[in-house]
Image (tube, rainbow, N blue to C red; front, side, top):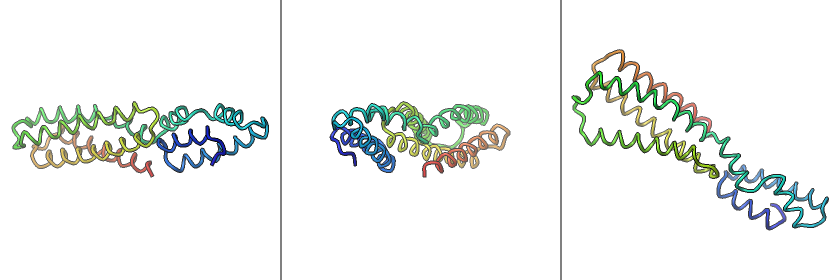
Length: 189
């Protein structure tokens, strides 16, 4: 660990925001830089300030890692493809007169509320600035939620809908989103 209280405080802040492996690497780099600055400047406080000026403070470092987080990229992709999938399903369900299907109103409301919740989670995920862990958790949760939602509408439409080109397109869109989501989740290793 770094040998100065100022650097230790910044590392403590980073430990609450970033994965431990990243914080460990940063700690190594900060320690090396601090030792070099101490040898150059000869004064611990000045060396610590120079080290943090070179690396940036915890907010700057966190923001850089959040911008590059796989979770943020996944959230952006899911938000980008969502309207297309939704438009296909809306068109298919209206054309198939889905309101006549024997689906309880509570189930319909649950699907709608789940969709709204997942979009909100994705929007909050991409707006996060400093909390890498929250971005990853939000993206993983929303991605899994969209897989479950797509599977639900796939099964429901397959069982209740009369086959049509629009239903086939909507089914294909959901299967494509499931595939894309699975590929995005693989990046979270």
